[in-house]
Length: 200
View (cartoon, rainbow, N blue to C red):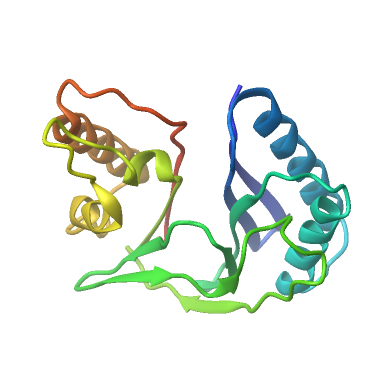
């Protein structure tokens, strides 16, 4: 049992939602929290609310339960023509790997579950053919090597640099190999989740 969460949700024939989250804490308590998040996410996607309103409802559903744990979340709606409308709730920066650059998707607000009155801002990103969206939890970026150096978000950016146009499965495998090489004999200490989307 753990606190990482991901889901891909068809919205209609031309769009889908992708989300990655991480409940603070460990074990059973974190697993219960992501179960509550999953249930709330299914409910808000039954009605065509705007993205910011959906996230605000998710936040309220967790905050009103008076659960002390917090949840980081990236929620994005991917449209057929390449537009991504998203909210990032204190989650590690989601990376957009373009042909000649890497961008961070960080617009949004604070953790879910902190305050039921929290308002969230939406971000908009336009994807071009071959662009990748790399979503991950901090079990990857907070990895340490034998010299007690942390991989960090910059390390994740370095790993995916040059991956533009690659099949998502190859990107996942590349990240896994690079992290294994970085850590050496050091163990993974946290749950790890990766989700990669490519614009064809």
